[in-house]
Amino acid sequence: SQQGEEDPQALSIQEGENATMNCSYKTSINNLQWYRQNSGRGLVHLILIRSNEREKHSGRLRVTLDTSKKSSSLLITASRAADTASYFCGTGGFKTIFGAGTRLFVKA
Amino acid sequence: GAGVSQSPSNKVTEKGKDVELRCDPISGHTALYWYRQRLGQGLEFLIYFQGNSAPDKSGLPSDRFSAERTGESVSTLTIQRTQQEDSAVYLCASSLALAGGETQYFGPGTRLLVL
Image (cartoon, each protein chain N blue to C red):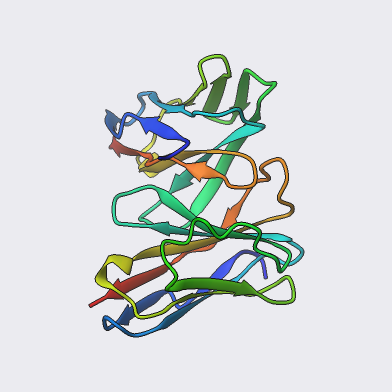
């Protein structure tokens, strides 16, 4: 089974709204990473949060990590149509395991 | 090169034929990974290389799948006697090192269609 599980599976919002995606994992981690994928092609790394960090920001992205609940969230603020993509979380280590992703659709 | 490259971009083959997928990692990246992604699904880990060595091949779906890496650079994923179920996008990624979950840089993928 997948180490990382994202929810919701799909999310549709209006441009300007915030989008929140969640990720749960099963085993202990060194870090957790969020990636974005457009059109079923390669993933682009967005942000990495280490296990001793609780929150991290990068531009319009905010990531939180709760190691006690084995969960993370990705918040995209003031969303744009160009943010439409699939978002994946991956747990670090020798095999970075990805969940099925959240498909975000931002309507203009 | 500037990023990870993969070839071919698209491959259509007939059931039963063998295919070779190629990955050129970022220069200097010692770790290389192969994933499979079926339509609308998440990434399925196949194999990783640390240098030219593949310590864990347990992710390969069957013995029809094999991979090698030479010169700590190019890697080839070979699928023998392809089946329709092998149709997917095959993604390659590389990272500077393996330990600690280094950021992976992905190639654009090879879209394989087995007829």
